[in-house]
Length: 397
Image (cartoon, rainbow, N blue to C red; front, side, top):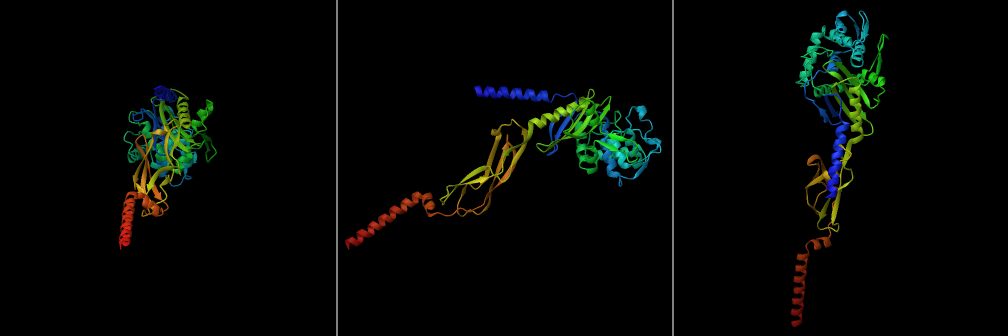
C-alpha cells in the first residue's frame, strides 16, 4: 500500500514539474518530432491566428519552385517596395536600379525577413504581387491547408490573411524537404552578390542581443505584427539522441518571449525524452519447448531493436509481448520463420518481429521414448509378457 502511495505521489510531482517546464508565454504552439512526424506538445494548435512573417515560409518555397536559375539577375523597381515602409513592414533596404540575384532575394526574405525582398521575388516571378499570392494560395490548397489563406507575401495583418500554427508547421515541413530552402533556413548570415550588405538571421540576432543560447536551434523564422504578437518557426537537433524537432509558436507578448519559449521547450524534451529500447537486438524474447529431442527447449532472440519515443521515466512493465506461431518444435520443423512476436507498449502495437528457427533440432530415440513414456511402458510390459509366455511354452515342451 505504501509503495502504491509513493508511486502516486511521484507521478503527481512529475506531472507538475512537466507542466511548469512547458508553461510558455506564446498563446499558440505546436511541437513535432520530425523523426516520425508526431505531435509532442500543442497549445491551441488548430485555432486560426495571424502568422505575421511566418508567411514568408510559403513565399520562399513557392519562389524556389518557380526559379530555374538562382543566379539570374533581378533589377529592383519601385513597385517592388512601394508602400511597405508606410505599412510598418520590415525592409532590408533594396534600392531602385539595384541589380541582385534570385539567390540574394531568397536569403533576404528568409533570413532578414525583408518585405521588399519578398515583393521583389513576387514581381520578378509573376509580374505582380497579386498573381504570386494566387500561387501561394494554390500551394496551400495542394498541401491541404484548409485553414490557411494569404493576401500578401509579407504577412501584414489582414482579416483574410491567416493560418494555424499546425498548418504553418505543415508548410514548413514541406518546405524543408527542398534542399535549397533548408540551406537558407539554417544559414546564419549571407553577403549579397553585389556586396551591398549582409543579411543575418533575425532569430540569431535576437538570441545574441539577449544573450540566449540558441546553439541547439538549427534555424528559424521570426515574425511580428500587432495581431500575431511575437512568432517563431524553428527546427532543433538533439545530437546526443539523433532527434530533430520542429516548433511553431505565435502570440508571445514581447521580445524575446518567442525565443525563450522555443529554448525552454527544446531543452525540456532534450533532457527528458528519447527513443527508449523496449526490446534490444539479440535480447532473449521467447522460449519454445521441443519434442523427440535431447534439447528440451529453444531460446529465440530479437532480430532488431524495438524503440519508442518516451519519457526517460517510462515504466518497463508497460512493455508486453505476444507470440503467434508454432507452440512446439520437433525434428520435422523446417528452418525459417515459425511465428511472430508482437511488441506492445501500453496496449499499443509498436512492432512485429519474426521468430526464426536457424537450426533444426536433432531426433533422439531417448527423447521420443520419454515423450511417449506411457506407450513405451505399455509396449515394454507387453514385450515382457510375450517373452515370458514364449519362455514358459518352450520349457513345457
